[in-house]
Length: 242
Image (cartoon, rainbow, N blue to C red; front, side):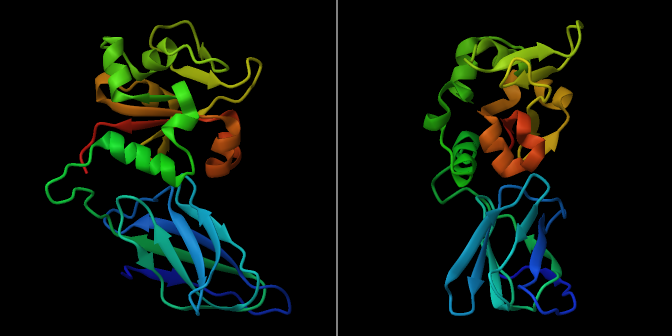
């Protein structure tokens, strides 16, 4: 399904193919969509490259050669989208926007829980709850803690080896700084439902409103969030409906 493409091509030069500087947006509210797999497909259907959009929906693809290509997107909760045929010239940059449409995640006779959605989105990042170990906290574990506190309390009570937690200051309502090295100057970024947010907003979530939490180490976080993820990332899925 083609839902919208806006493409501007640069002037041709005598060098490699244009680099696509793209962004993926939600067609309903025009909000950026992170965690989208974007595939570069040749006219004959052969896939050449695939990348993942960052937290603000951006992606960069450097095709190996000039020619005609199609971009295809995949993300759980959205319809698969294919762009019209794109003719890339030699060298330069090609800004591009892709608009994708939300897709209901419920199936006939079946309800898809937010926790299932969280695990699916984690899978699209090439990770799994089993890989994360106790850096994956699901709703059952939160309930087992039997505390009506905040999301930051859930993180602290897990006592995760190699994860260090500091308060910004001495006040009871201060947000946390999650670090993967005790002396690291960079805190983990915080993400709610795919959107990077200030730590006080994320760690201030009431624990009863959190469905799942994933703590990514700096290596994984940098892959998906660039240099901003150099200190790791804490991902929250709220108990929202889809």
